[in-house]
Image 1: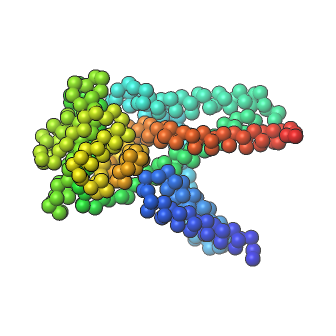
Image 2: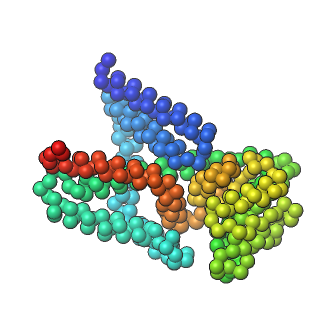
Image 3: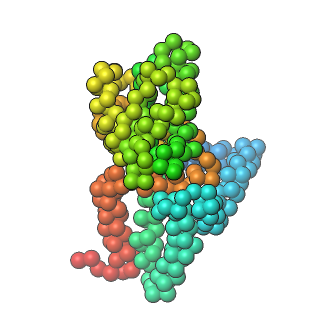
Length: 356
């Protein structure tokens, strides 16, 4: 058996294995980072395998098609890579003009400064100090960690895109609407209004199709700068926009997403509502992490997401990614420590140093 046949067969088997595991993982939990990782690996390996098969086929038109496809894909990716720092700073400026000046809304600014200033400076210093080394500190330690973080981020983005394919059935008994900050102490913000409207649209569509209107649980406590609980403001807004008065409930004590789910579950249990026949409504970028909290408290439900303004998408996804990594910080810390350990061995061996 030739090396070509072994390589292609291995690529096909690996791709099928990833897709099989992806199917099992999706069946268990649609909102899981592993889904994106498996999908990305399947796409990468199948893509490389296909390129090799086409390259060795000697079919001219197929080779030409491959070249043009790679060129069309590569040009925007190269532009994005080259201009990423500038684009991040431009987005940070836009968010600064349109949103509140909180630390959470300055993530693209911080990343832009890191890409344009910090990383090039680190690399310049490293090359100056270790120019004679075969393996520099930057290449040995910084690059592998960046690769790991980018791998996880791409897995997160792919996992999110997979969840966007989900369309809930119109057989739900309830929808939990997750709160966000109020404006001027008692006014529903545009972001929060979009979450409420998403739940109202689903409830109306279900009623039209089945005649059953689900319970709506508006979940959110009272912040330090708010005059009423978010749950109350949300309920009032929903009633003014067509919600059924006898199907609205307000949860008034939660201060974060975990408490949104946990305290709403108590209300559902008290009302004897079937815990397994529900949904939650939030912003689209937040559905992935919120689903994790729902499952953590014992609510095996999926989410529906309200559209996010385009200018806010980069910052929103960065924030969710950081929060998601923080939720599993022990696992990621262990992974990074292992990477650094291997990097240390690579640095020492690459520069001809004896380990023992």
